[in-house]
Amino acid sequence: MSEKQFVPLARPAVGSDEIDALARVIQSRHVAAGSESAAFEREVSEYIGGAPTLAVSSGGAALFCALAAMDVGPGDEVVVPAFTFPAAAQAVVLLGATPVAADVDMITMASTPEMTARVCNSKTKAVVVIHPFGVSADIELIADAVGGIPIIEDAACSLGGFTPKGNPSGTVGTLGIYSFHPRKLVTAGEGGVVTGRPEQMNKVRVFRDYGRTGSGPGDIFTEVGLNFRLSDLLASVGRVQLKKLGDAIERHAHLGQLYTRLLADVPSVYVQGGPLAGRVWQSLIVVLEGDAAPIRQRLIDGGIGVGLAAHALTEQTFYKRFGASWAKCPNSERLAKTTLAMPLFSELSESDVEMAVTALSKALGG
Image (cartoon, helix red, strand yellow):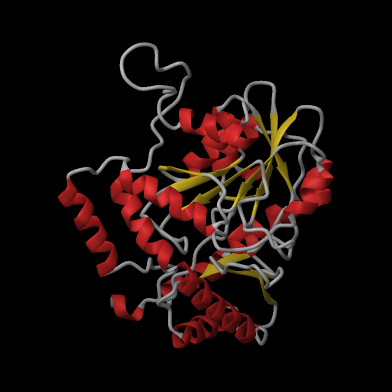
């Protein structure tokens, strides 16, 4: 099968503008974190309404820095959604704390106030709330439900989106994070941003730069940290991509709604739900009645690049070793078995969407 016949799961919308940006930085001979990274921080800050931002090397690094800035450590528990990529839970473990899985809603695949509050207790140091695949979680209601427990808002998939109360995604929590992985609507190849309140942001600034609190000779490494800085090379790509975000959101929404209309005629399948207002269609997730694994393979064999949606945290070996074993998450475990990520990217054509839906219907025996 030729590459032309295969519809990939995702394809970053990068081209001559990004090449020109990279060439400009390379010609400057300053490729490490510097003026481009600082400009990217300012531009992301402006995009989300002026909240302070710090660029880091990945979305996972952003989560690690955010948790470290909350002083998460041994003896603490951190609540994380159970249907997700395990980056947040792994960061919790690396900091010596215990991740506690909270189940998610079967329709939105997001945390709910009730399910989150149910697993909070006196040991809970922070709660991670994720906007899954660009669907907004009820973060304001979750914040009310957990009282004064600090929230880390994982908006990795939701830059440009809004919460149910109209706040820019990523700006409600004590700290928020974004990712610029290749499957995100803004990609730098890799990269992330942390945003939030000044006290914690000062800690992030120190932690992402080896614990450095000053410059020059003498005692300037007063804390412990790592190198999580974002290079100017990657930041230059992110700056170009950010200018295209509005168009990307509009295109993804058009394709997502087309998928939804076409899939309404396919029995035993539904598209991840949630409010359309403020949604960023980062991924197109469908839920099947039964095991998705054989359907996924049939689609790939037939030229449609589908993927896993997310994982059930409670089924991962590292979580069984280090996580809270008492947390039960049947919805997440079912979603992990029955979901597919369908092709979705800005350059996907309407005919590609129709082809993918037809292939899914046939794979299901329709």
